[in-house]
Image (cartoon, rainbow, N blue to C red; front, side, top):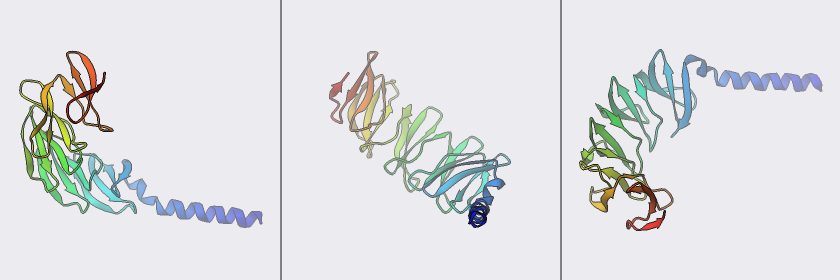
Amino acid sequence: MKTQLLLLSFLAMSVYTLGQSWVKKYDRIDGSNDGLALVKKDGKFGFVNEQGKLIVPLIYDEATAFSEEKGAVAVGDKWGFVDKNGKEIVKPQFHDVYSFHEGMAVVGNDDDYGFIDSTGKIAIPLHYIYAGSFSDGIAPVCNKKGLWGYIDKNGKEVIPFRYHYATPFTDSVGRVVLNGIRYYIDKAGNIVKQ
């Protein structure tokens, strides 16, 4: 009985190790997001599926985890996006990008930020000096005067530009700073607590 248990344990360990042998090919492996894991080898990044098959080739200088079935990738200092099949949906062209949230991603060049939609088209022009991700249908953005407010997915101002800082909404409230004091506001811009 002991011999059978020992043999069974050895067999199970061998199958597990054999199934994960692909991990030894890479210098770095991050956790899986959207069914793909970020991998790095010899200074280049790509993505593998859960079986270890390379889906996005190791040709990128930087990359971030997938979100909403898109991963951010960089060539030099320019960022773009690939889909889950490895197809570039946005050619690396931006100096800064954030992950997709609610079908939109923040993109920026120098001090100009805006948003692209899930097809990679500019949905909200790059005319803000900073932007945060969409949440609850709105996103915090900072105008050229250095004031923060919130816009909807059409780029329409929904909470006025009056704050010194603002964050994306979480649990139906946004955190803002006004005259050095932190507040929580609702989607109508009303203070719900200090």
